[in-house]
Structure formats: structure tokens, C-alpha cells
Image 1 (cartoon, rainbow, N blue to C red):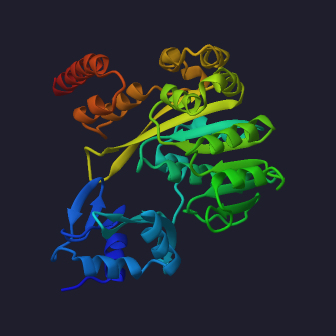
Image 2 (image 1 turned 180 degrees about the vertical axis):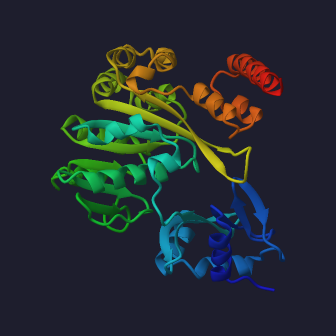
Length: 368
């Protein structure tokens, strides 16, 4: 038995899987609600892996894999779905991962974002970062934010720089320009150098992956643009430290000062398996810039930012551990997920015991 890529992609779409893995030595594997499940059938051979890879990959990308060890791109599977693809070599063999990109943009309510986040979309300038590990839904969140701006702001020219483009946006009230790295422009850095001449109001940087890109994004925010970007970090404090540490030591004080003025928000998100039914639920930490947090960034005291977030609800801030507890009380996630994903496991366990005691007392009252 051999495998046909179109059949595997039909399966991914039908089952609502997020990813398809092709590896030599095991059957094709899909990820359902965070869990890996092998497709019924024989293990993939070297020949099958290469055949499946070539069925979706251009000659140019195959050459890039041979020369550089990997290639990333996106493609449309008819009208059914779009996929982001990573093709690479491992142990001298071809392998690939295909991630399904949702065709329908989610609302803030469907994602679970607090309503306060919407206010960020109307800021005249500054930098808003959406952070989290790979597969945490950052791209989906950003696409929904851009879609709201696209629908509601007739004063905005939105320019996105992505590698690859995942969500295609049509022109609505706003004007939108989407540039793909390696297709429309050689690199993120080059795209951001050019973007300032394109009369942009809002700039989306798909990934702030290197010093050049980070520096250019900060400059764009400083020069009066609203900049959105992503980083593979968890938590506001770690995000700020990651940006500062990307710069040489003799520039770090300057970058702290710049960040303390241009950074308007850090939205960190994670995905947790649902406890009530199959699926996953997003949990968030949100830090919005206040005079106090601006001073902490400038004075290199990011370790104190979590305390400000805990007491910053009136500024639209959300503490991750409190958000986890709320989802636990709603019956959406398990106790293990709360402890595993929390920033302060010792404290969260004490709060869990208190919450559980209160829930037990409520149940006793209902029984009476």
C-alpha cells in the first residue's frame, strides 16, 4: 500500500486535525486536539516520503531542501483549506509537517480574548506583541486582530510581512498589502526597510526572529506606526528580556529606553486541552504599558512586572495564573493543566485548594 497526499489532506480536513507529519519508519501521523494519532496503514518508506513531499513541493523548494536542509511555504488545497508546510531532511531522509490554516477567521469571543484587547487596535502608534510557543495560536489571534482593523478602520493601510503568508485578507474598509518573504521580498529586514516608503499605518511582522528584524520593528513603532509582531516567548517579562538580550551589551540600555516608550502591550497565550470535551482552550497573560511598567522596563527590573500585572486589572491586564484558575472553575481545563501551565506552581496549588474547598461547600449547600 502507498499513500496519496490528497487523501491524507482530505483526512486532515475531515477530522479537523491541526497537523500532518510525514516521517520515514512510521505511518503518517495527524495531530488531533494536541494528541498525535497514527493513520491506519504501513510505515512510510524513503521512496514514499519523497513521493509525498514532491507532490506538494516545487523544484525550487526541493533544491532549497537539498542545499539548506529545509524549506517553508504555504499552499491552497483546493477550496477546502490552506496549509503551511515545513519540508526538511532528517537522518538524510525527506520529511515534512503540514499545518492546516483555518479558512474562517475567528472572533475575539471564539478565541477567548478579553474585550480589552480590542482597544489596542485603535492605537495610533506603538508595538503590540503576541507571544507563545509554536502551535499556541499566535497567527490565528493576529489574523483576527488584523481582520477587525480591516473591517472597522477606513484610515488604515495595513502591510503584513510573513514567511509564508498564512491567512489571505481581502480589502474591506482598510487597504491591505501582504508581502511574503522569499517570494515578494528577500528577507524580513529588507521588507521592513522598504515598508516605511509604502505609506503604512499598521505593520504586521510575522516573526521577529533576528536582531535586524527586531530593530527595524522598533524603529517603525518609534516613527509613528502601529506595529504587531510575534515572538516565541512565554510571559511579558521574558519577552522584554528576549528583545533586550538580542542586542549587544553596549546597546541594551538604549533598547530598554526605546521599549519603555513604544511597547503598548504583550499578549502571551497558551493552548490547554479541554477537560469537558475534545478540543483546546486558549489561556492568556496580558501586559499593557503603564507608567509603572514603563519605569520597570527602563530600569531593568522586569522581574517585578508580574506583580504589576496581578494588580493591573483596571488597566486591562490579565494575570496568567488567575486566568487558568478561572478556566478551571468553569470546568474547561484540568487541575494538572493549571499547575503545569502556571508561572508560580506553589502559589497556584494553594489557590486551587481554596477554590476546591469553596466548590465543595457550594455543592453541599445545593444538596441541602
